[in-house]
Image (cartoon, rainbow, N blue to C red):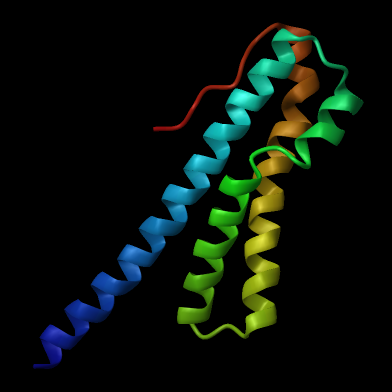
Length: 114
């Protein structure tokens, strides 16, 4: 009985982590498309950074929701879960805004995750 309960709990936790990872990949891939579009348009770094704050809003929201759900299941408070999930989404966005100049200078493009 204990083994079945342990497997069930582990399966639930693993499913939640998969949802969070899937939503993170979705947000990242959306930002990849957004970044490539702006690189092709030769958008200035400042304008890209400003526009990127509004990019992929649905994917960002889904990522935050999934990560927040996971954090709440691990015992975080509502505020801790919200802060953590938002920080993680901000980190994904920062990776694109931070790398934008490098892509421009080297004439390269980001690649989608699988």
